[in-house]
Image 1 (cartoon, one colour):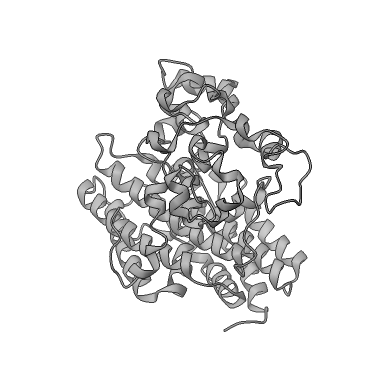
Image 2: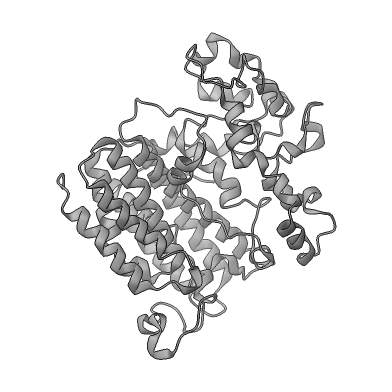
Length: 446
């Protein structure tokens, strides 16, 4: 992945390390994967109760093993739905043994990278995110470990998840996909859930086994902004990759509910009322959900680069809206948009955050209710998740907004998403307008 100079190279330099550190290491210098058992001792990370001896609570393994759904990701492959998915896809082996499934539901690394203690049935475990432990397991227990740089730790195989760009990209290996880890339309048709993601909200509902830095004011806003940038960048790279593949067109890149929705009489159709601006009637809309809210964080950070991205995304949307659109043009446009997004994500990872930025972005999202709602259920979902995330951060720091009213208004957004095939853009827009009115009354505007 190239880092292009759009006036943001300096901002990207400290962030670019994730490119080489994000994928599971296959270099024997850093050692093998041990499995989570090496973390399970009560004197390491297996304590039942948190300890105050060090900055690490030492109960991280216990939280993962007892509460985290990632620990049961492998077990899911043996349930009735997974077995049915395997049967529909005509997999040559059961899901619990098939690489197509194991790529995300377990730590599926080459046999030569597995220590004797490694067990694939442990699911998505410690080393899936933190890197192969054999190289750093002993070293990270000594006091001098904290004086090492992220690069020095990476040389031993540890991934620096305190960097939000690295953290996001690590999650997105499964939650958006890579060349080896992919959920396509065929899998979705067989019963696999479509992929959605929002770093701050997903992190908030996890049983946290980590502490984020208190040194970064409004950290949650940063987590949201960087997460949005990274998921857009990675999804654009995925689009470019798929457009150049032999399986194109890939319908998983489209808005699912442009096709899979409840039919109504023509006079009652909000979709036909809106029309098909920028695309041929009958061509399913491209799923641009990962851009609809990121654009506002981008504009608040670097207006010039954000403007270039807006222009490129309009080009890409137009290409995707053509029947039998030119796949190489689509891939090239997606590559250009990904480079611009990479630059903006680097800037977002390095900037500071405050009440004004958070409130401004919330207002921009809620104020764009009509345009966002008309882009479909997935776009509406990103808006709802983002408003929920940013309101949580705002309440944590400012506590000015009426919590009960705002929670009820945002809760109403999620209610509009409960039945995706019955999603109604005008109703969602009306509910988002209620959120916008509450935000407009809040003090602290610029």
